[in-house]
Amino acid sequence: MTSNTRLPASGDTPLATARFDGKDQLVKQSNAQIGWASDAMAEMLRRLDLRYIALVPGASYRGLHDSLVNYLGNRDPQMMVCLHEEHAVGIAQGFAKVTERPMAVALHSNVGLMHATMSIFNAWCSRDPIVILGATGPGDAEERRPWIDWIHTSKDQGALVRDYTKWDDEPRSAAAAVESLMRGRQIAATEPKGPVYICLDTGLQEAKLQKEIDFPDVDRYQPGKPPAPAQDAVEEAARLLVNAKKPLILMGRVSRQMDDWNARIALAEALGAAVLTDMKAGSTFPTEHPLHLVEPRFRPSPESSAITKEADVILSLDWIDLKGHFALTLGKDVRVEAKVIQCSVDDYLHKGWSMDYFGMPPADLKILSTPDQLVRPLIEAVNRLRGNTDKAEPKWPVRKRPDLPKPRPEGVMGLKDLALVVRDFRVGRDVTMASYALGWPAETCTFEHPLDFMGNDGGGGVGSGPAISIGTALAVMGSGRFPMTILGDGDYCMGVNAFWTAAHMGIPLLVVIANNQVYYNDVAHQERMANVRDRPVENKFVGQEMIRPAIDLVAMAKAQGLDGEGPVMNATDFAAALERGEKVVRAGGIYVIDARVDVGAPGDGDRGHTSGRRD
Image (cartoon, rainbow, N blue to C red):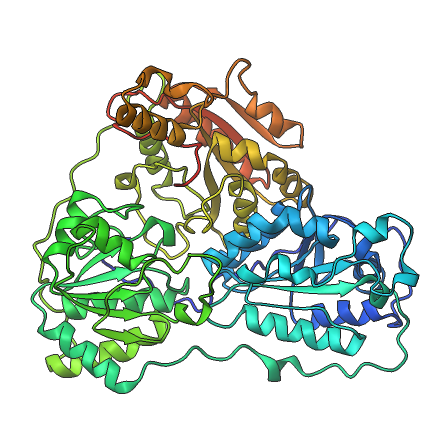
């Protein structure tokens, strides 16, 4: 397809239509009559259409576990057994990134919740909806087992994550738990979206129902429609943009729906506006469109900085860290002369503990709406002012992208060589890329569909990539899209046992490890410190390398039932490995490629930091 052709509307994004027949089947059919409080909770999960529940088994929710198996028959939701609580939440986050709907997670007591806190923070920062169920030992001290129930019982357990969840609750009856689950799902899926936490008392789960539960009609308790922009704000925004000499659109957190993707293209074309996109947000606009002037960026480039400086009206569609973008492009203390239109509902989520709201940007017109609620009425207002519905002449010079080099066929790959091979592999394939390793050369990225790339984890830690990639792969199963992820070796090693769940459940995925055997991002920080303090730069690798012995990354995968190969040392062999991996994945398997990367390869500049923390 041509880069500037609008894709046909296709309604909703894929919603994980596959079912896992033959996985974790019941040994014996059970009495499925509702009789326990946990049965009511399980029934409500089904009615809420929470199709999967990722979990690490735990005694604190043994009642709910029994109900999921023997009352529901392990279907709708189906359990996805994980080897770490972080992975359970990460899988749900990856699923939400594609489907924009929540998945369920179950965490064992306070200890499971503490394990999961990093991945909950990721989902919070990324504004991804998840319904997280926790548990606590019996609130009634007389019912606690000696020792274990005491250390697994906490007062106000939700306080552990209250600063980075939208809502939490600890219901005291079966009927209250039913309503809590319904409310939690509604809140998680309401813009701005995010995780919620519901703590279920062990004693309550295991109590017999004393009366019949009156289950509500869930269709009457759906998430509310996002707020529409005020008409006068739409008209003012249209006037500013139509009269602008150099309008600029910053595409931030927007929907994955194809109709919305097409509407964003139509808006840019109606204005002749330049468009910049952010790797943190994923694929939000076709990268090869003539109005997409430079490659998507994780941080601004000289080209994107020049465009921001030239713009006289800037429309921010929930751009992540707008104040930071201005500081990096214009200068930290430089006044923003352009008129700024900021469209976002993120203000409704801001709290005091986490600074994920970023610096306060200037906004001449602040519109409290979701970007995709604004775009269509804005197109109508723009076309009324222009007096026609034709495409506007571009108000920016069309910039020809420089031709990319071919990867060096021999010698250890640099990260750019690896990226060029991946770019060639994606041609002609509908690849959903769950993750790119840190430092990925953005000029090699081509996005033509809202599911081409899912963005970053949100919280900037290490170890989330494997689980989020599995959740993404789960969500696109049955859609015809090819699931793939590029992980740094540090990210892979920290989260590698997430892949057992994918192998167990039969979730196909192609995994590439950009393996430079070092936490290279932190090497760059140590080099900076050495230069500032006049100390030996040569020591920058000390305490950073993952060698002596080298880690057998593929063996770690094969130990969990996956297939793979490596280390692959050059671009020619890597391209062949991708072809072999594709065959395995299309047959329903998981294939892991250890692709060795030389941090000092020619042409890589300061790239190659594929392992370190995202700071």
